[in-house]
Image (cartoon, rainbow, N blue to C red; front, side):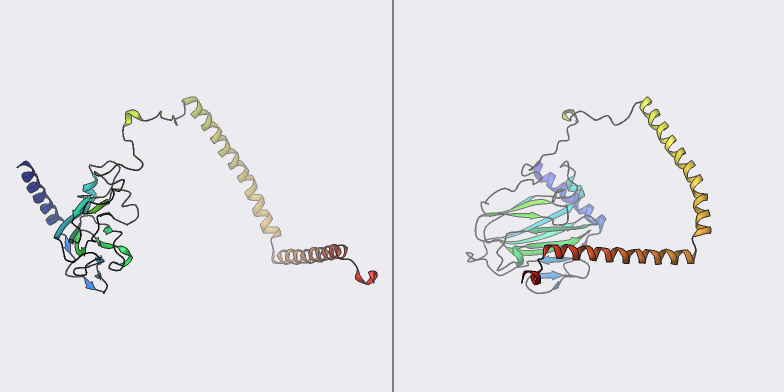
Length: 286
């Protein structure tokens, strides 16, 4: 009875939140591009849509399952270290089940509900994929394979899975449990948010005497740099006005070119001398 009351209250709250956010329904906007790929001009996407093609080993549809998956920041609050989340992180179906997923993105960023490892002869790249920029929703359907297996579900937007958007779809008895799924499995690398077990802090604030010494050194450096610049600046201006002329620039360029030619000639003579020393004179030998 308590569970029914909690579920009813949750549904009412979710409905109120969705109504307040004005969730956009993209299902009527999707255009079929063939091979189970559906998109619209507003960013909604369904990849791997399959409503009637049975996977190998399936003689008929075993059951029809419908899931409504919510995605958003609010679902990460109860999992420390996460930023985004699904309202649920595990879904169970029978082998050969026809599964329809309504994906509701409540954030004003892009999210995905992406599943990997499906048969590639039915699903391009072995994926079933729902994607939408919120607040909006999109719906897709696929048929689960016939064997007992656990499939990875996640959001493939950069760092979204690492920050909480990871789950699994269990077909039949499943095969394994993926790590680091919030509320389902232990993380591969556990974060520690207990301040009482933290290591010793590093004192990066200097004492008063050290600060005064550092300030005096810095002030001395600033003053010396200012004096040098005040002396050198007039000298540089005088040199530029009296010596930097077009004739001097041409003379400097000509002398530089002349020097480069001399160095090149001497380098060539040196290389030729080394070659003569290394290669024997065949005329003398004959």
